[in-house]
Image (cartoon, rainbow, N blue to C red; front, side, top):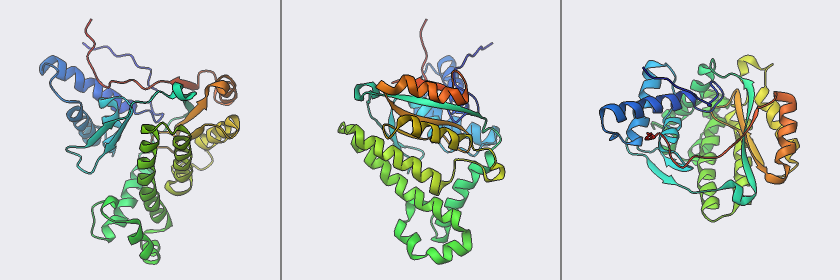
Length: 282
């Protein structure tokens, strides 16, 4: 028998399914393989299980981050051998805390909304006989804007433009952390969140536009931060959680403002564990 306990909120954008899959992978690795299955392989198996047996069209990011652990930058060009770079960072040393705000809006039934994002991006790529957008350039989309809008719709084009700009932002964000430029890091986080809202459009489901808990949370967080820190949607979006980097000197008041709306315990102050899936010897 196996018994599990978890503090990962389900259906909230915190990769609860990936965490469970990685847990099972590590149990099987420990019991039957002397712990010899690599973190990367466990993540790949976990993604396959989620796609084929759970029916969720997830990529590899959630499983890989959960399995590898730490604050990492990952290049998925070759999903069989992704390039993983650990970036040590202590947000407290920069006078900030990482907060995850649970909007109490379950995203478990939003599979179609999530699936539309890669489907629309791949449709744009396929126009250029490419498998994915990283195989083309933003300039290709701009030069063919008129026909792409007519053929695939404006949302697909906007999501593709977000893709190119977001990848550039990731490189800038990593550079900022490596060189201790935390203000620049916060700027890039804010830009990313802004792009997600306007161009990726994963803040609320168009099929249920009357419920926009993530947008409410972002507004509350921005007001509470008063021009400091940064906030953005967390996870796949549409419902679930947002993340906020909150200056320590306003952390208490920030939590109070958030929990007035979303309830006691909805604002979680987190740290990033330096290890992922692992066996603890008792």
